[in-house]
Length: 227
Image 1 (cartoon, helix red, strand yellow):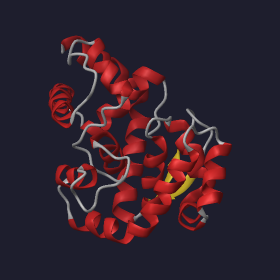
Image 2 (cartoon, rainbow, N blue to C red):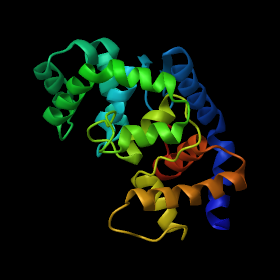
Image 3 (cartoon, one colour):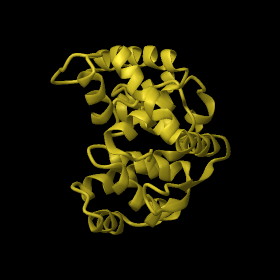
């Protein structure tokens, strides 16, 4: 634990202002329904985004890269995600080199049809962990296709939730490389929550939130503060 904590602690002064900026962008998105992202100096991209386009970004980023998702989100915006046909969406996603353009376009079109109910749920349920369960549980009527705990956590963090972990490949490697969690073939829901508790301890040691810790670890692994 000590080594991992020190790695993050040493990183904080280097990028704290960018992490704080990103957290404020997330908070604004959750509070006002829109935000302005500025990813400089890590990517020369800035744009306005709404909550539906943020959900689409998280659909695109699953098993892909944040930078690719950002570029597609910047290109399409809320109107593009909401209004383009399935064929047009698939072609736009394919043009950015995404491995699964048809699948992701299909999921986005499906979410358009269900968005009103999902949006109402987000407004009503203020417990982020309960909300994550509803978005990720296959038995839930609010389940988002392709979302497990990681993807649901990603979306909720990006609209202002700060107490849940996004255990993607970068965070998982950080945990295993620093002896904080054993290597496993599959990160089941139970294992995910166990790993999240470990990250809670790191947060307590550093005095940061899960939302902030994720950005610091992502920077350690990629040298970028994205989302």
